[in-house]
Length: 621
Image (cartoon, rainbow, N blue to C red; front, side):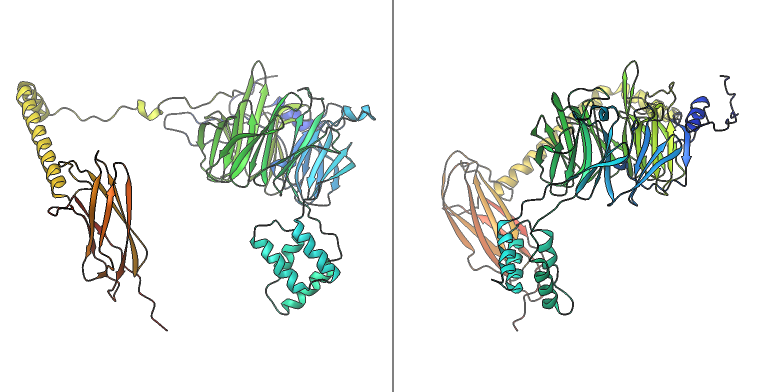
């Protein structure tokens, strides 16, 4: 193949089949498609993607969990499968739309897996397709509906069941049923959607009539509670071979994670999570050693390892928007435009701050002489970035905002990136085999540190001052030491005076008594509570300590004098003093707290409490 000279573009050949667009993208290398702003005097990271195919009229608005690729026909030609938001399951063979199926509900995720069917071994040659929508997981074989797995119903509260049974038998009226269900809701019981719909009828005309009609219309039906699927994924069962059986797992709105058998028709295990899962990722083999990480809606990530809930819980700064698990790292994108990398044990490795909001994340894995793992991030400023660890590898400017993406094999191209945009278009980009995934940014100090500072030239005054310091270095050092010692002496003298006068936070301890005072105020007014804490920091107990609280005419103190019978060393004695603001304008003034001596004289310690402005007292009606 002849090399393309700089500034020229080779004319594309006419299409000759479904894979013509992918073949042309491999044969020719177009110009760079975008760049991003980098540090001064650094090269901008180039785009390493080649445009292979673009269908702006595909009509496939879908997020990343609803985009995948698989060898559905078993002929080595990997089809691109997209479950759209308008309830369509579309499949492309190369650049041709091969099939389109109508779904009954809006999909939340799709996954291709090899099902294990001993009765039909021929079916294991091609993968099946699991489509999660509503409370069902639809399984397709050869792009035909094969099985519908229904998520098990949730356990209903016994008291709620009894309430609806009594309402059905006529033992209670709808008014009593409404009150009973309302009490159960206030007690924290998980009610069914039927009960919540009844409790939601609170406004509008003829409220009681509408409640009666709803209660009598639904009471004869059995009380059940269904849940919806929120995310779906697959994990290998016995080995890492590409054609080995897989197991499908999915999360539900009720906070449960179901792992199905390799046939996809029965539940293998169930795990209860503290919150509803939002994203799932897995690594390992199910029957050997595996790990499933679940990012939930409570802003935390939980780990399931070898059929047990792990104690590793990672809490994020904000809600997660993407999750990738590869090797020994867990990468999470959050709503505060930051990508965090954690170890599988929950220790943070690094954080990457993005210039815009994160729309989608995908892991890039290439198996060559050594395995390369990178991260693809789609941003709200129409940029597509590739990171290798903390280093930015490439940026690509997109003409439309990315909604979903999937990296893997498409057609016969191993390193392809399928993208869906906000406008519903489908794009496929491929990575050249000679692409370099090393980071463009170096580790260590920034490049600006190598730029020399603009140091001004040495003036005559500077030279004379330097010469004077050299000649009088000893005298200048002595003057500095003398001033430093004088400063330390004056500081110690002032501190000693404060401790002797009792105006510091603790007493001086010259007579063996060392008391620390802490006073805080609580309340909005006009009634305040002053919390006084006394702690004996000395070695001897102190007996009969009077505590005096004094204020101006703004406040009235019912009991200004309190006595501490004994204050043991290391023990904290607490006193509560009620203070009432009598100023009609709600003014504020200082309150003095004195810890006096039993024999009289100068107090041990005192404190001044700055009182806040008082709220106005309620006028009597």
